[in-house]
View 1: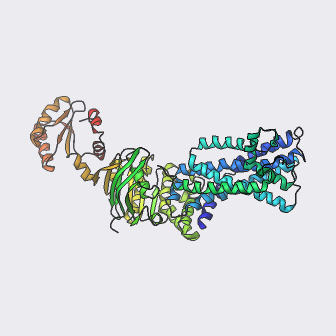
View 2: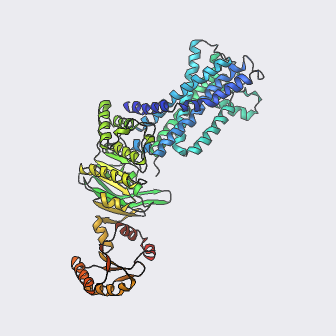
View 3: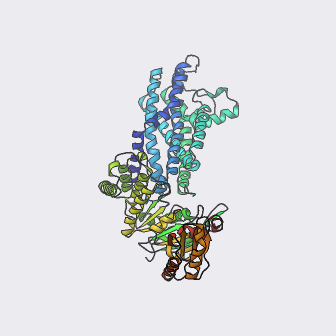
Length: 258
Length: 320
């Protein structure tokens, strides 16, 4: 436990000295709030509420997606500088090294979500749900983000190359947020693509938040993630974590190929 | 515990490439073994295997008495590893780096602070202790790196090319600091490209070539293996070469090698000081103006090149 504390302390010092990381993670989401929630809000209409309300849940999920890249970069840089080798040659638990990345980056994500909420409130976003419901949605977003952080750890350990990581995670950010109901209801998509997008965890998490915040939920359709977005989110995230965490630990054990 | 580091038949392959083809090493406690060899000979892989970062495909190894595969945690308590790059956190200050390592090694908050100050003093980093280490010069970063692997006072130290890329002054400072550790009884395994470094730091040297040990011994033994001492005499003018060569030939009864371009004559010395005395006397007697008179032993560079099979090339272009 003291290992996790010292290692997380190291990451928090990083965050204190380079707060740009928070800006990097919140840049795209904040831009989406401004462009979609403010500039386009008057021309896009959704059923059951205002578009600037609809769009916010998806933007929060986008913060989680943006964290994949920044965590992966942090992990891969430590591999490159040899710091990971130093940790691996020390009598400390390997899980604690990885755990420290995710704890520290969750703090980054929370700060970024704070920035996004601020801009959201400025363009008129309001939560209409009750306190418990609202907090449940926040918890769900944190769970989603935390899963994404582990995914970032795995990608960083496996890909290693900073430019490649940058490219792939930037693409994934676009694909996963646009191939979901984050910014548009899915009814216009062709059947097979619609199924893919419905099962995208970003969709179920965003939809669950909208339901809990009473922010113009777009539930139409018969599939499980559409009818029970909260259940679907919890399930997909649990499955993802159960797959990604052991893979990341394994990748860390074999991270020294040369 | 007989040896601080012992390896028997270590094997490792990456895909089709056999990096270690059965490496045997044994390093007595408190001594320094230098691993020499060209790039890709398996030096770093050996170090990483012994430091528990890589699992060997075959063979076995113990470090500080513990098997590296079965008891890695016990090994990790007793080793320090300085890899090819200074593995320090650039955003943390020098002090924060050392305190973090101390806390991870279980020294406790206060213990880690005390140890960090000791090391900052010992490595001449106190003046920069409060600056992020990314602002350090290359030499300072390496020193911090070395300090970081000494935080928990390890019994065995692995130094993988510790001075690669450093300027001569920083290199000498680092060597002195390594020597201090050696004086304290730490066992060191050092890989290097610089033969001078092995000559200066190592008690024994192991030469690696394509994944196996191709020679082993002290620096002197290796040099002797390659050739005897030789006497080199330089003269002022080309016309003095003939009489000087004749004089040397009489003195040591070996055929001298004459290089007209550098006006240098070299002759093998089989019987040491006696030959030197006779050569000096002969030269004096025939009155040849000598500008340089020196006994040379093969350098470790020559040893290295000959053993690793690159000697042919050098002889062609060299001065022999």
